[in-house]
Image (cartoon, rainbow, N blue to C red):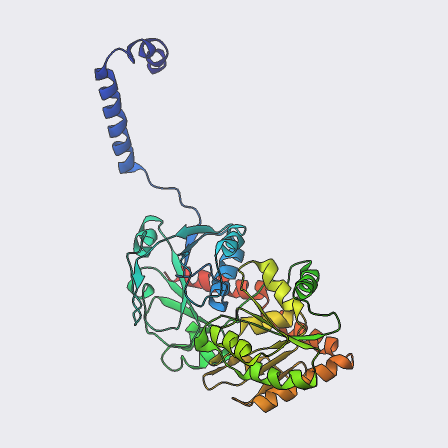
Length: 417
């Protein structure tokens, strides 16, 4: 009967008057409403939401979140990543699109939000968030939230009480929030700071994972050297990091200033230099220092590492892990660094087999280490040291190992939900 009506009668009456179209609109409206009373959305897989304000940045914290989101098993989980594309001052990056492309290729569903401002003091509330995270959690029926930060109670995760939270703890501050099921600490030094406030069963040391260098990166590094006018027969020190003056330590450039007088065929390639560093080099006319702007493209990142021979690292507040150090090691680069009054987690994996670590503010010692590696390079021994660095790095930040640990934490958290 219905089929006859639709095929024979309906075509004749549907265009006859406005009454028909009003009735049809009413019919559809109430059909939808009635269906909604008994219908429920299809949801087969558990849903994970990663949140980070500058989530498409290329710092160690952002990389940790991006790697986990990209590599977690999409056959078991729907993975969302909530971020803003506003670029923070001192981030050393001009746009985030390459990092967005990185996670999308891994099957992650990005959720971009905008905001009007952020408080400078804890709890670091983000104002004017659109869409806001609480609406997203409710509407998408999120099962578990993944966030990163210093560790203490903060916006927005402290206000999320009804789902489990896995926290990537960067600076070892504790909190007592019951639904924070795990603190994944980026070093043992970070983990040690949580005792005795956080229960031991909630604390895991998970170094920041990293994918391996891309094919062709070594050749790209050589091209970068050529573009900067660096001779093939020159030894190049390098440093990669944020351009913030707040973390700039002059020990590296001051040591190089000593070394360049004795070894004029030595160069220093610095990616994302702080403005204070630029000023020193320009004012004092330090030769053979090359500045390169930062980039979020993985192709550029790996080419930077392959463009220099030895990582000459510096950072005033030290490292609570040091992703840039370990990525240089992945590229078979020996390491020079220094101790800090604040963080020294990089000492957990740097050994004399392939690295040297200067005391705080000891420019003379740092310069002596530069000279040591120049001598090793001249003697043809630098490659062997780099190979030892690579083997340590590959074990330290294996993506497969750390993603499996994370997935087990997710399963445990959801079981106890």
